[in-house]
Amino acid sequence: MNSITPWLLNHYDEVLGTLFSFIYLYFSIKQNIWLWPLGIISSAIYAWVFFDSHIYADMALQFYYVAISIYGWYYWHLGQMEQTEKQVKVQFTEKNLWFRLLPVTVLLFLLISQILIRFTDSEIPYWDAFTTAASITATWMLAKKYIEHWLIWIIVDLISSGLYFYKELYFTILLYLVYTVMAVIGYIQWKKDIK
Image (cartoon, rainbow, N blue to C red):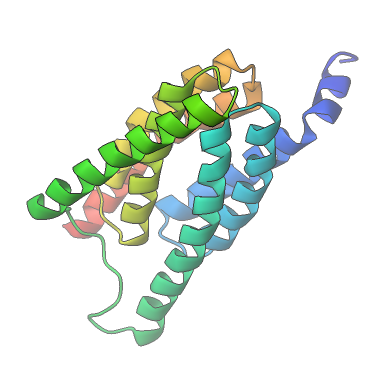
């Protein structure tokens, strides 16, 4: 017990970010609009955690999460206010949208990886760039309620767990392993809503 307390005190920000992230994930699966403010809080905390761990693309991604959370909150709020057919509903991603999302994601990966290689001391530039680019796409898809965002998260969360193991972010590993399981559950739950 004596060794746990100092570790928790030294990693209080990671523990707090993990707790807020778990609550965010619960509301995400339930399609509850409160996922967005919780996402803002957890992203702000994790921006610091990743900066401190030299995982710079993931740090920058947290700022994107704050911005997309504001957008998602607004977008979902309008849909809930109108209570009409314009209400935001779960949907499948159309093939022509995939043809636009894939090249954008690849371009983001290339850009982010080059920034990390040239301007940071990142030890994992390609993996960090991949998870960041895919996360940007998946979060945008969440805001629009495209169900396949859960499938992207499964891949991103598993890879991220490996990165965080490498960086010894143990609470964050736990968070991302739970994210992986919950992404499967989220996909199943959202698929029921389509039917």
